[in-house]
Image 1: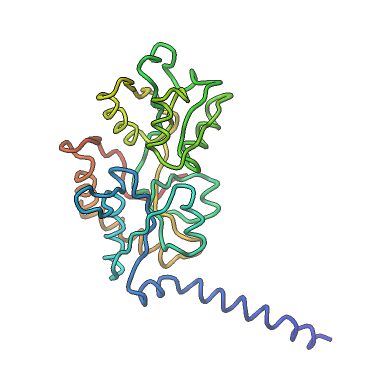
Image 2 (image 1 turned 30 degrees about the horizontal axis):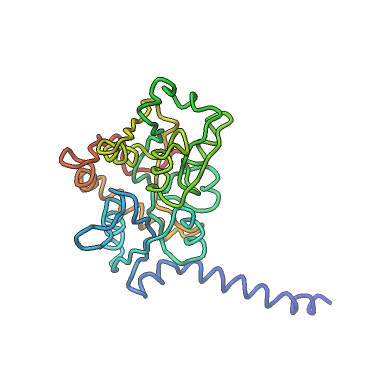
Length: 276
């Protein structure tokens, strides 16, 4: 009986071994392929966006992906994905890593592994300037409609932190911004840098916009990696640790967020482990 039971179980046991071996070889697969596939948004300046002159996807997160590929010794392939598809694309194995404004949260950390923090983002709310007397803090938007990108941590944060709020979601930031200008919503929740760009754009339109000073919440961002891919995770973290130690991480930040850019901000974080 024992032999029969073992014989029946053998195919299952072997399948587990094969699956485990395949899962452990993801970094080797990247090396054998000669390419690291990085999923990024391509619609979020200055993190990843299409250069108008070349149509090539460039940006802060693209540069970091390039450094990871260089560290591994392979070429970089950029794959544009939507906000909602970030984790599904990663879990399904259609991308090797995700560098796409990927905020850390306890729920997401159960689904995927995170690299060291590559950015820390204050999440704020954009409102119409004409409503400035009505909305002074995020709490003042209680019971209102606010826009956000579908599947984003901004959407989740608005639901969690603004009482009785109704979130109206869109597939990308420009349409969420347009909803605010067209008075379909009272606010637009997103990362401060993204909102800053839309605020600047509004100055040349009849509907001027402002950003509330108080942040709704602050979140660290990291590169997403499938659960259990410890070898690849180590390569990414070693890359970031090297960039931080050499000062090159600061230079990449200055390239996209320095005084000569439209996104000037001070770097108040390090490429180090996320403390969730």
